[in-house]
Amino acid sequence: MAAKVGVGLLGLGTVGGGVASILQNPSERHPLVGELELIRVAVRDLNRPRPVALDESLLTTDPSAVIQDPAVDVVVEVIGGLEPARSLILQAIAAGKSVVTANKAVIARHGQEIAEAAAAAGVYVLIEAAVGGGIPIIEPLKQSLGGNRINRVSGIINGTTNYILTRMAEEGAAYDAVLKDAQELGYAEADPAADVDGLDAADKIAILATLAFGGSVDRAAVPTDGISGLQGVDVDYANQLGYGVKLLAVAERMAESGDPLPLSLRVQPTLVPKDHPLAGVNGVNNAILVEGDPIGRVMFYGPGAGAGPTASAVVADILNIAGIRQASEGPGNVDPLLAASSWRPCALVDSGDIRQRHYVRFKTKDAPGVIGNVGGCFGQRNVSIQSIVQFNASDAGAEIVVITHEVSQRQMNEALDAIQALPEVSGLAAHLGCL
Ligand code: NDP
Ligand code: HSE
Image (cartoon, rainbow, N blue to C red):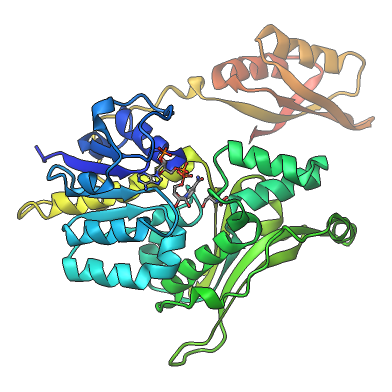
């Protein structure tokens, strides 16, 4: 049986609370989650109400006490800001502890210093939560896409501004009110100017560029424009011309090669054609398009901020460190995440129990009462219909198309058998699933 992996949390706010909640409820997650033990938690104010119920003896206002606790193997920095976060990360590395952080501000500015310190100490600093909230993008860029020559990384990488732009466009909601909602939902930075002025997106594109192109970039030199100066009239005009407006971050190579490799980075409100994949990315969601050779274009999409999604990314990093640790425990041990072996039996339910919506098309006579009889067969088997429409009525017959609400395959089969037995129905011409 592998030893428990001790986790020390620096910060118990939106993200820290989400992480603690996962660690306290390992049931039905990967068994390695059950091997993680929350040892100590640093906060600023011991009296502040917490979103998770924690043993109060775990809390301290001294982050160094967390880092130096011998039972802590992994330090999770979710305090935010530049200092003391940077110094605490370096302190943890110096103590020989691997670090997981969601802090893009620190990584975009001090990533090189931190990476060098980690390499020298032989520990890991993992940053999956720093870009894209719950979207796995950091490890895919580091690992899964490693065989590609990356040409361009672009996307919507700030949840707060995308949430604001979406609600303003869809509801005509007022900027200040929606920003307040984003803060209450835990999406915004401690100083939301970092979101609305594009600084957070600039931090993130600098990090993505470093991973995609292999060299650190000068964060201060990234041309950055946010949404605070965006005029509603321009959003309206763009809409009339067939575009949505998104806060886009872009990093692209400007030459095949070079030393240094010339790159172009920018963050700015950008018109996106309505049929472009990024145009449908709304609310707090983020999406990142990675273009490379030979893969072509891949898009990563999902919730870009908030407690749960961000904690998902943080815990993934902790698990990676725990997996590497288990693999190094002795000959014959492998990383349980990389091995991807199953850990319990699973069984498929009878296909009759599968529940979904259905699309069906019948060929029928064009006769009075057909729709009623078809509808009756569904109703008698408790199959609820969302829509029923007759097409192509002629002497040769008609077609009736039905879309159901969610039902079991068994109910659906019984209804279909009854319908096909109706004399006015000549056959079932199509049967598809429906989301
Ligand atoms: P919060 O402000 O909600 O939480 C910060 C936590 O850090 C609080 O628990 C606070 O204590 C504690 N803290 C602050 N200063 C100190 C200190 N000096 N010593 C000890 N504890 C301290 O921030 P978030 O959870 O939203 O963000 C944390 C990090 O995650 C930031 O880097 C952010 O950019 C990043 N992030 C956030 C996302 C989000 O959706 N919110 C998404 C992705 C990344 P107390 O509670 O007592 O005040
Ligand atoms: N404030 C950030 C955002 C949090 O809104 O995207 C996630 O990094």
